[in-house]
Image 1: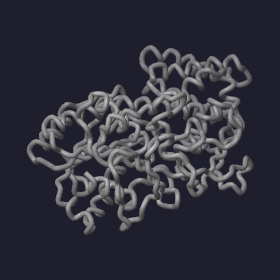
Image 2 (image 1 turned 90 degrees about the vertical axis):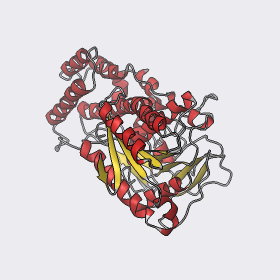
Image 3 (image 1 turned 180 degrees about the vertical axis):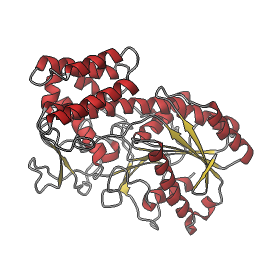
Image 4 (image 1 turned 120 degrees about the vertical axis):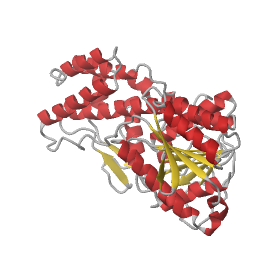
Length: 450
């Protein structure tokens, strides 16, 4: 056990298959719950990261401002409660928003771009490919010498790399099936054209249906007056396009892995705590792909019909904005809709989002481009492949949309509905901006409502 910002903190490390690596870690958590009889346990999960220090920094920063908020007079009753915190550590990767980040400095240097692609493929082979997949990635590495100018080599290369996702369990709104249906050379060709993301939200229309969020300002392909953010998808060579394709492959890999960890290790940890303390209040908090992890955890518990949780907080979550919908498309519910329909969350369920979240926006924009061959801006609430961390939940009748509040402006959270908190007006300025006092002030009100 460690003490982080005044909170008893118990790490639980998980492997890529969703299993808890050390039974001793889980035993330490449950023993502390038995012996200290806390009133609340907070399970918190990170998203993309470079190393364990990144995840620890998220947890420390979040708990620091949360603890400071508990000293406010409106939370006197909450501060009197006794908390333990369980930090989930899972093998995610850092997500490169664009191929110019990292080793490549001279974007005209094709050899440098090629070396960077080779390095990343070697890393995928070593850390993410199973024994059966490694020969395919090795073959893809050999094709790097022939992909330039050869559509046949490009087609084969993309197919080989996508074999890493053969066992991925992702819903249709993640676009993977539509990506697979196209020739690899066509996918790489689509990544040559620039994408532009709309960033300026407008006021919600009075006649918007329940669960729909405010629209997005007009988009101009030249990045002009519409308040857009450009995505430079390629930098002069086939290897720049392959770099973007590897970004997307990594995104899909991490999405699938986060779901396995949530449904496996996350749900196991909740069950274990509930077994020794049936009355304890359980709060699930997830940032980015950690939001998908916690939604997967809640979904697994919903399917069992037991072990309900008391709150769910999604911070710039990286899953489809239709994930919690009642009717996504063709009258099918969202991938995580069982969390709502089976009422697995007793108290508040909040989801922060921001039009300034370019990580979620870019990844889903690229997905949409490859799935639909769009040439204009994509990624907003009207996109089939938009993300909840950018647009909030869509097609969820009865859900609530309101601005994220500044500290001192109270909330009145209801149970049984999705509460979308819009941080676009300067309170959430980027994908990682979830440790601020304004964000944890909302979470303090979530806890207060349980």
